[in-house]
Length: 187
Ligand code: 5GP
Image 1 (cartoon, protein in one colour):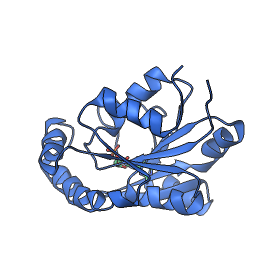
Image 2: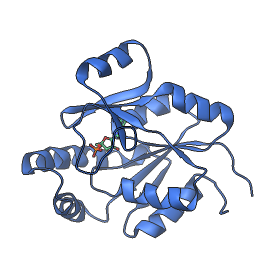
Image 3: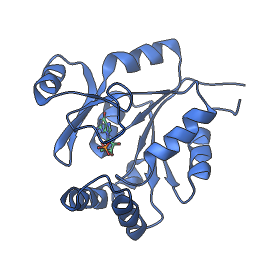
């Protein structure tokens, strides 16, 4: 079994199923490390500080940006998100395959900072299906969904910038393709 160290960014519009695909990948390949981002967004029901995100206020987020503690950061639908740099660098130094789940601007920043990173885009089968999934999730109010769909149109137009595009028509199949894209052989 060869497991080359690789930093992979998974991007794609909100609601496309990045979280579900990543859960399957991590269940099947627990040695893959997933970065935990900081965000100023409020926790959704069921989210725990330090697990899905480190939830911080705007002042703390600003401090981290100013101190250079974030590898990349972006604002998305009214909130700020960023990747703590030290944790990623530690995994890279240790040769651990790492996965970052980022929106488009973050993916572009990683590409600029680390050209060796692999950028993978998770696409919905169609825009209509994306809108259906985002609405069906029931976690956001209509105004938030509208803003996320506006951003999704822009994100979908950028899929050509990615090394690989995976259509999420089936979560298990998409997870298998992501693992293949990361060049990690099955354990
Ligand atoms: P959500 O609020 O749905 O958890 O995330 C909103 C968007 O922000 C998603 O597209 C997600 O992939 C992205 N995101 C999560 N963490 C980060 C981060 O650290 N940096 C960037 N640039 N985007 C992130």
